[in-house]
Amino acid sequence: MHNVGASATKEGIEVVKQINLNPLMGTSYTPKVIKDMSLNAKTALPEFHGFPKIVDNFAGLGRTDLIIGRDGITRTKVSLSGGYQGREGYFEWIIEPDKTINHRLFLPYK
Image (cartoon, rainbow, N blue to C red; front, side):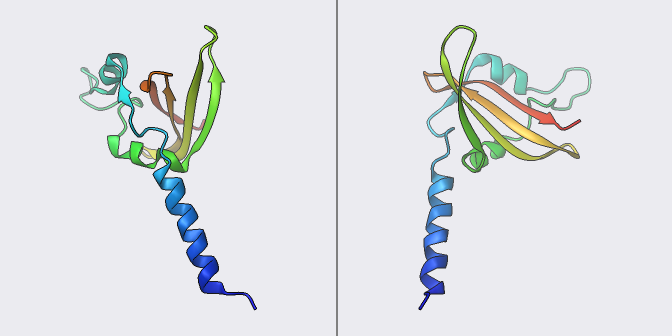
């Protein structure tokens, strides 16, 4: 006999584990990213780098890949599907080996 309640609980635990494994936990922004996140001086609006910080809390639900830069350094790239400023696309972060975020951007689908 299949126990539906136990199965649902197990799945719920797996979701909680995924949320808790946010690759952005313990990271900090580089000065470059902080500058990029600021409002555009001409429009007084955030650009695609300036999406709300709360989105960072959901990065654990996205895809995490290791990438190797042209400099030979391995970094962590996180991509999360979503929407921003009325457009669909994905949020992207690149985490350096020292746990700093040196790239943070929303990329709309074309």
